[in-house]
Amino acid sequence: FLILSVFVIGSINWKKILHVFQDPASHRLLITIGLLILPYLALPVETSYLISAIPFVYLVAVHWLSKRWLRVFVVLAILNGVVSFGIIDTLMYREHKTIEFHAVSTGLIIRDYQQRNRQLIRAKQLAELNYPDSSFIYVDALPMAIVAANPSIWELNGFSQACDTMKMITLSGGLSRDNIKIARANGLSVYYLSNRGLKYQLERIYGYKTDSLDVKEIEIGNNPVK
Image (tube, rainbow, N blue to C red):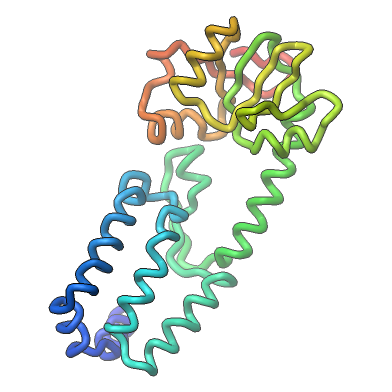
């Protein structure tokens, strides 16, 4: 780490850094980066929140780095799609609230491909499970993928939710207060799948406790109600 720090410090064009802090356009870039990083600070395992800041980081790097090190920076950014360094395991944090740090990991493109495959497998599993009649269930897969996995049972409604109209079952990829209100107005019981990190998402993303809203946890299997 010390050697890497020395290389990084040595690669920086300090005169250009002074220009960054004196240039109004650069001020706007730094402010923009800071604002775009705020959502990530609220949920620091969701690295996808940083994607929108990347173009502005590149623009600042043009001012900070010499041409030689700027080329190295671009090459490393491209290689990040294949191999990454210093990655937090987001799945472990969501599901078990434990932080696992990987010094070397597969790159963003490979991880995204693997995650999409897991989502398709998960959607096929959810499409075949038994659910209570007259229920609204928060699931951890894209509803449209569930519909594609078993279109004979599920259909997509106007809210991009998978619905079994015969049994009045709705599978949703989100669970906002409006979702809960509408579901209960239609006489549906509200659940969320257990052991998939969804309770964590409810508390961190939607900002409420499941107990206070009488949202029940539901187990996977033939006898799902917990």
